[in-house]
Image 1: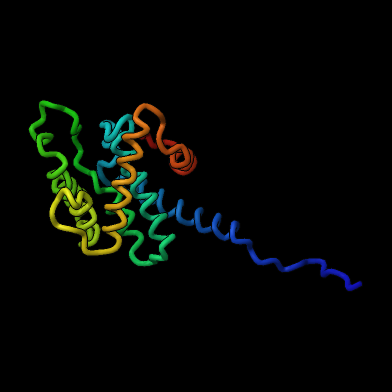
Image 2: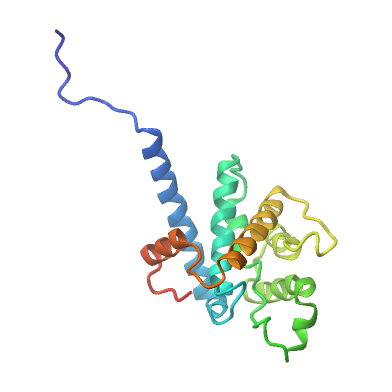
Length: 191
């Protein structure tokens, strides 16, 4: 019977590789979130509700996190940092759209991408063309101009999924997994 070597070289399992990739993604993702909160007004999104009991900030975090996950699953290794920032800023309109006395709310669904893009450009002058497209086109087909890039299509699709999920969850805590990750990577973030 042959003896086994004292130190066996073992290749990482698929699950270990996935965990390492997830950890790498989480570090990059939450570093970007921390940067946008620090340099801009992303934290203000925690003060307004989006769908049901979900805040605009948690909605934006969910859209960005799951859009990046979808892009990675589909094998998109292109501009993930741009997809991430564009998705985080897609609802950067910075007002409570449920306030009946605010005139912006009359056509919120149609106009908020423009408000979000204007605010994002003001706070982040280094916004790329792709990031602006993600913000401006995420409400297609309600807004008539479709996205041109795959990353913008991914964010548009995930935004619809997240809005449906949040509306269905209404009074319960949406995104328990994402909430746990936020608590791990950014425990000081109020969302």
